[in-house]
Length: 257
Image (cartoon, rainbow, N blue to C red; front, side, top):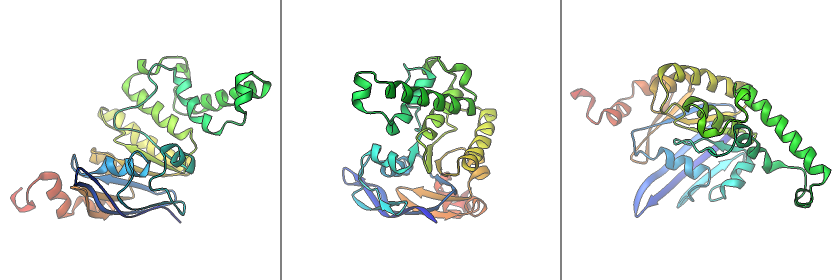
C-alpha cells in the first residue's frame, strides 16, 4: 500500500527553482533515504511535505488524501511527524514536558474542564504524564524526566526530539539529518535505533542524511536530489555505483577522479 505519493512537486524562491518536478513513492513501513549535496533541495522537500512551505505546483498524497498546502498541525494530525536538522526542542521546559506537549493534540477533556480544573482535566493530565513517561523509558531518558531539555547532552537531545515526534503517534516519521553532530559510536547507536523504531512502531521512515554509512546501512531504497531535481533512485548498491550520483557528490566527472 502506498503511504506517500508525491507527483511533480515544484517550489521556487525568488524565481529560482528549489524543487523541480519531484516525484517519490513510499509504501507502508518502508525506510527510505533522500540524499544529495548541500543546497540540493532536500530540506525544502521535507518542509513541503510537513506544511512549512506551500508548493507552487504538484500533489502530496498521504494516505490517499492530498495534503499539499495544509497547515503543519493538520498534517501532524494526519499522521506525519518530523525532526529537524537543527534540534528544535522546547529548551526551557523539562524533558517530560517536551513529550507531554505532543499528546495534547488528542486530549479528551474540554477547554472548560481546563479553566475550572474539573476532574476530567486532572485525569487527562495524569494519563498524558504516564504515556510520556513510557516514551522516555523507551529512549532511556526517564531518569532525566525533570531536567531542563537544554541541559541534556547533544545525543540525548536528539533522542528526546525523536521521542516527542513519535508521541504524536504518526504513521510516517521524517528525520532531517538525525546523525548531524554525532560521533561514530553515537551514529552506530542511532542506526540501530532507527531500525528498531521502524519495526516496533510499524511506521514508514523518510530520512535525509549526509552520513553515507548510516544511509547505506538502514535504507531500503534511496532517492537522490541535485539542484532540486531527482537524478537517481534505487537500492543502496545501485546508488553507490551510480555515475550521476558520484558526479553530484564529487563535483567533477567520474573519469577525472
